[in-house]
Image (tube, rainbow, N blue to C red; front, side):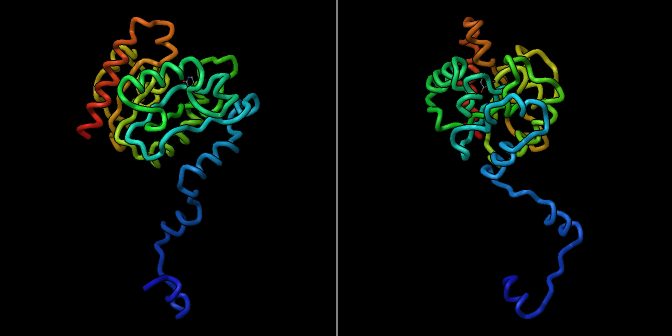
Length: 212
Ligand code: URA
């Protein structure tokens, strides 16, 4: 029997108290409304210096999500993650394992650019990551790839050196979703000798997706 029919009959439906509270406070739960909330965010000082927020790009139904650190100057200008030199390298790395950018989803820990590309502060990470958490939950991808130290340390809640985290199938968070850690493309631009390690990490990502 549907709700409208019951209401017309004057029958009030019983809703548990805890659910009533949930109904009253629940935010809309889809990526588009989350993106709109992020665009309006003024929770930290970064909103004052940003051109725009940088939410994410790609296929929201992708099996694999790449999480970087924070937008840089190009991303802040264009509103899209990984569009500068590091982004071009990421696109090439994806192609090397047979993915186009539009096959995957790409986002960052921070949705606003830290001025002068400085590292995100702990407070900024703490304030911004509820958005990332919600984004990852809504997408429900099989595998998350952390690009670099900031994403890896946040998602795993550890401060272990990246060289010891990369190259293995890990799990994170309450849902114990699969996670792979690899080098940030900006690091690889400075240390090209480690590109082959990142390439083997991405090959492992592909294998994980095939078996997940
Ligand atoms: N570096 C990142 O971590 N993210 C971007 O979007 C661009 C550069």
